[in-house]
Length: 383
Figure 1: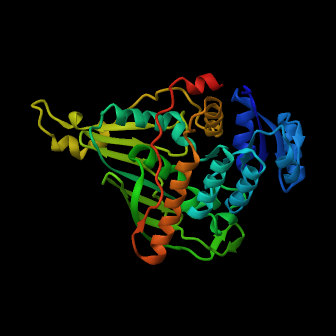
Figure 2: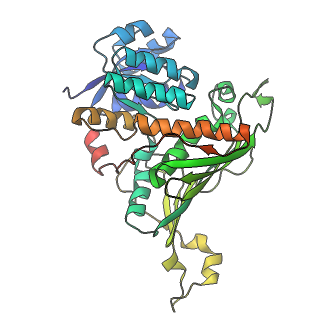
Figure 3: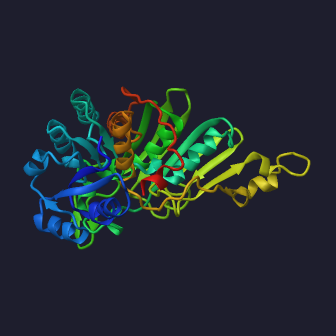
């Protein structure tokens, strides 16, 4: 088995230019970018020249090139299914930006074909492999907050048009807050709580048409979600995503509640530096006689403690999941950001929309095996 895998990247847009390509070319030891591909060939050529990438190929050339081991799919969500299937048909492993597919059927088709071809499927978001979420998982496993009872995932602000250079596609079929920002918090919630069994959700479109810069765009997807998830072991979590709110972006995005305390993760899209993990422990709310102090309880925010991260990791580390998948291929074991997990996440994203449309609870059809924590020296070894 080769030490360094060659990657063919499809899509040279914002996330490729700012995140994946610089990270892979400048950080990870077990892979190198062999070729870029984009509908805008000039854009791909400029990116290749900037980072010393040897080839710019057409789609047909990329899928046919025997040098490429893994296809990294960084296209818009609407193109994920077709390109992922085609990559597998060409005999290449795939790692896709989220979501794996737009529906459960699409995601399941991809995972099934990969199994038939004996190929690996990986899918973003891989943020749960970063130091912030890994620290949270250790807090839970160590029993610091006691037995976990429930959780909350929330990401609410006033839309990507304020931060993205070309945001119209976010409001079209295949995007929206559930498919765009939902996978981060939901993946982390599942990583803490295990597989989901059932969910319900209410919501819809808040603002339509949507004002974006100097024009308006028609909104084709729900932009407001308020849901509840029931897990297979009977625990539950609330889920709130919105692009229609003002001033709701402050506060921990992921919260886990236990019998001895609560756990707070500041940012689900942060791998390490800047990802703040806090705990609020019952013991710290007791007075000198050991009784719960209602004065302290009323000021509970003052008693939250920082938890040191279990390893050093930059705030932006996209590509970590691909890096881990390559090591899994070498070792012949399941990857952590694997297709089975991505399929369950995709079904949940789809299920929330189905629940809104039908007004009824949605019963999950898929499951997954809960992944172990990443070895604390993994990131350091891979740089």
